Every structure is written in C-alpha cells, then in structure tokens.
Length: 107
Length: 189
Image (cartoon, rainbow over all chains, first blue to last red):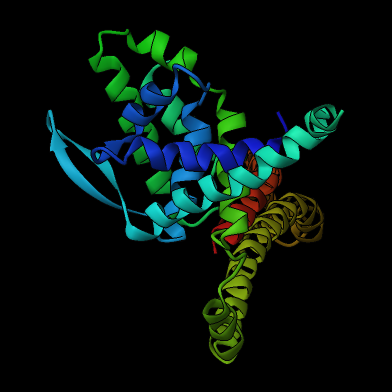
C-alpha cells in the first residue's frame, strides 16, 4: 500500500482503537494486529503525532511496579474519525470510478 | 540481546534528538517490551522480534525532525557565552598552555645542565694532567693532589654521563604521551 495512504489510515485506526476505552501502546498493537501489521516503532511516531495535533492526551498509571502510559482520545480525535469516514465516501466513489463500475452501470 | 542492551543501543542511536524526547522514546520501548514479557514471552524473543535498533531509530529521528526536536549543535546561549567570555577564558587558556610549556622546557634545561656538569667534570681530568706537569717542578705534593682531584672529577663525570643520558632518553620518549594527555584535555573543554 502507498506509504502516505497507509500512514493516514493507520492514524485513524489507532484513534479508533482507543474509542471504547483508554489504551496503552502494546494493547493498540494487539488490537490492530488482526487486520494490520503494526510494529512498535511504527506506532510510536503515530502516537506522538496524534498527541502533538491534540487528538489524544496521555497519562501514566502504575502497573506492576512500573509506569504504563495510557492514551485517551479527545474531542478533536473523534472529529478526525468522522472526517475520515466522510472523506471515505468520496474516496469510495472515486474507487468505483477507477474500477469502471459506473460506466458498466450505464451500459 | 537483552532489553537493557537494546535500549542502550537505541539511546546511543538517538543522540541527535533532544534529551526529553529521547527519554520519552526509550520509556515507550521499555514499556512495550515489559508488556510483551508479561504475556510470558521470553526477553530474548521479545527483543529479537522488535525492529532493528537502526530502523527504529530512523523512524523516531524522522518524526523528531518533522517536529523540530533535533538537538541544536550549540545553543544560542552557549555561543553567546563563548563569545562574551573570550576576554576571560582566552588569557586563562594562554596562561595554562604557557605554564605547561615552560615546565616542559625547564626539565630539558635541567637535563642540559646535568650534561654540562658531566662534561665539565670530564674536562677537569684534562686540567688535572695539565696541573700535574705545571706544578711537578715546584711542589710534587700539590701537583699530585691536583692530578688526583682531576682524575676523581673525570671519573664522576663519566659515571654521571650514563644516567643523565638515560633520563634524557626517557623524557624524550615520554613527550608524545604527554602531548596526547594535553590534547585529550583540550577535547574535554
């Protein structure tokens, strides 16, 4: 997949992974692993970027004598997801056009 | 590779990004490794499954560069301090350098003086022989005394020559090592 496209989708997937409940790094990797291969080192810059753009906030919780960082999705983050889903409708129309479905329908 | 080795290598690979950002990255990797190990996977396997240190570092650095978190070579303040402090640090540096150089030269002067003493003592033997013939006619006792003193002098001079030569050689040999020491100090500052 195109790198830019994959990165954009991955950002939204990461946001979606913390929609139900706050998540920590490894949990996000596990949740996404069923449909997308994400390495630790790929996830880190994404989380950083999401935090930088105000889509997530982070806080630390003690766990087994060490600190674990949790990420919580913000209002901006939720907006990003809806925006992506809206965009996706036009992407799907473009997709059908590229496949030639529309033309086939007209025939 | 153990977790600590991985983190240490990663830390070294991330030297060009700011300290705060580097520590954050290392904390993240430390947490992810711990989380995996908690699932019962061995440390060795967890670390082996991670991306290579180089690849991980590259991703982190690329992102840090995009967000302007690379370390400045010298901060503006450091440069200002170096420039403003010039009247202070330059004379101090000059004094230290000249003192070191003087002490070094002084030792050579002492060695040179010892050579001269040795040579002068050897020459005193010649003077003793001259004295012997000069005074032999007037006072045999004085003549032999002068000759004896001259002889003792040259003996001492010859005996001294070898150790002084040895000291000079040792000092000359130690010079590069001393220079290295001065140079490494310079790098510290």
